[in-house]
Image (cartoon, rainbow, N blue to C red; front, side, top):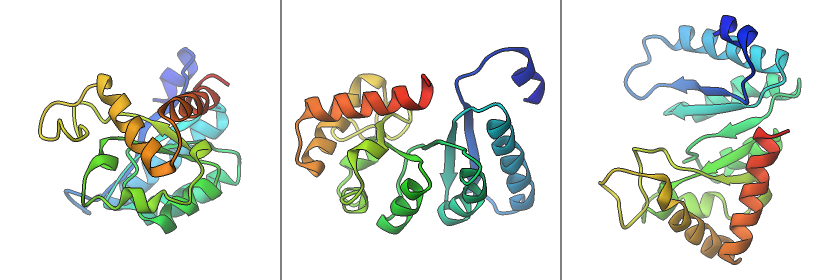
Length: 176
């Protein structure tokens, strides 16, 4: 990865992070790789896109010292709780909001209730996690308006405002 960072320009590093879903056998190796990748992001002044599964608090804890050095980015496909959401935005990171927001038992609407729209981006996890009514099918980017509409309902704002703010947020992350 380091060789490629020296060869050409990139807009971000990721998906990187910690994933304890299938196994915790390589936790130390995952942490070492994640720390190295975050340091490269700091060195190259690039945002990161974080993948975390069954490891939200360890991921937040790993990011904190790098956030203090100016690291920025997105917690992709956020599905955590309100406390985790607050910790993430307090580090200056954004929450990636996808199809999970539309799931009845996700708890995501409650988790992000007090998080400003200015700390969120809309995203897919295509081909995974499509919004209702497409749950169980292949996800695609054309479903983003469905996620946006649900976020508008959660935040009690218009879809147009959600689109404008989340697009501006994505531009701040990737175009600066």
